Picture 1: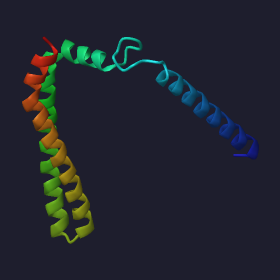
Picture 2 (picture 1 turned 90 degrees about the vertical axis):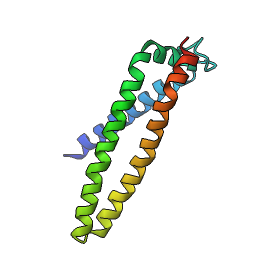
Picture 3 (picture 1 turned 180 degrees about the vertical axis):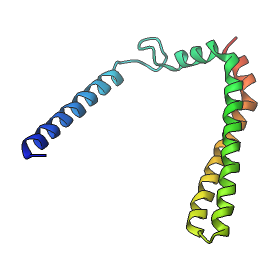
Length: 124
């Protein structure tokens, strides 16, 4: 690639970044108060969207919980294999990922437990 094409590509990339950033900041500074009344992006609108799909909340969370559990099981098998083969650094990285997934699993389980009460409170 010659220098002319390189400079053109850099200028085009810079223009796209500046234009994209300008559009993002223009959308963020719309002057809304977070209530959903002015811009349509507030908390009230998010709650309304959840309430429209309230029958899907618990099944989706349950599906997420099962996916996380399956992933943890696979990673535990990989960790055991890596440890058996003497790859301690690999096993340590896998164990770190398992710990992260266990934290995520705890959050999802808590959301499943709290979902019916939250939906009853906000979607009545």
